[in-house]
Length: 457
Image (cartoon, rainbow, N blue to C red):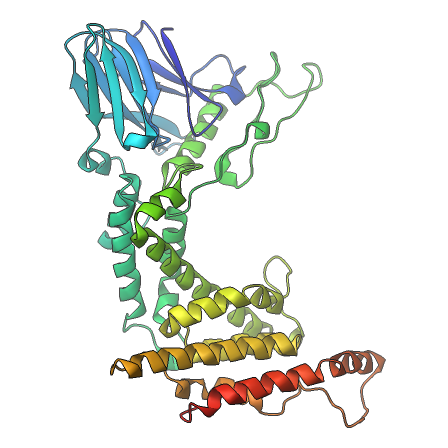
């Protein structure tokens, strides 16, 4: 072995290169699995030994090697099921360069983007910048459609500005998709919920893999690490050779490595400095915010659908985790108001009315405050467009149904007439609500003031 290199993104991946002219990748969670590497990288025209190797500083799946036959190679690792039950990992050379002498050292620097530096035995220093076209062939595509695949290619090339510009155009077109039927309550963006979710995942930097989340196995027992794609960090275990499990097989090691590789190679790698990149390119922030808005619109729609499906069977419908839907809305109140003000056309009036109705029976003050914020957002948008002499995408007239829910006397009001008919529990709940009556009235008055300057509603 001439050189070793730790992966900067997955702490239990180790690459080695030696006299045999091949580079090997090892998963140290399976260090006792018969000493088998989980991946082997080579090139048919390489007739020298591996003198140095380096992982990419921007991609978790790229490994470069420098050889004694004056060659520099950049290898791309890919998980490949091959039609069998046990996935394998294949390696392909996506870039190469010849030097004047043996390559003695290889370095990859994050500050320089997709670039590597090599130092030859005669002292020549070479810079290798990987062109986006070379990376395009190695991009993992999990989305359908040319536009979405262009986003995947740009993100893999770390061209976040180009990816963001394509995302903004794509989401804007989804919003205007005529296939959506507003009269039936289906917003165009909802039809593309899966695409929006994948775009959000694509732009999300994965969390750093903590060193405490894995451990080397005992000398006689291999640790079954588990896959990162399972959503949980592998947990370390302590066993004895007599009572513990048998060492995991090389097949199991390769299977977990292939699964982890598929996870970290798609989108942005763990701990990628997304905020720093976005601060240099404001359009990236705009794309992220637009995706967050679309994702919130989809989430609110799903909440309303769950509540409608529950009907009168449940007084407080819950999500899949057992949490009350109305609490989820209250927790997102500030975000809802912010996004409705920024993109009111994304949140149709029918949805907003249903969302407010989710909250009102359980927290009247919060429901009325949310409704007030929505009314103000629509009014602000209408005034801004009128001031510019342009047609506003929304108007307060659209909020007739919401205004009716907010201002018309309903069962959400406290009964102060002293009428009975309920049980002790109902009486206690009504007494608790009575304390908030002045605040409810104050909020209603604020809504009335807001709408007084907007006769259309």
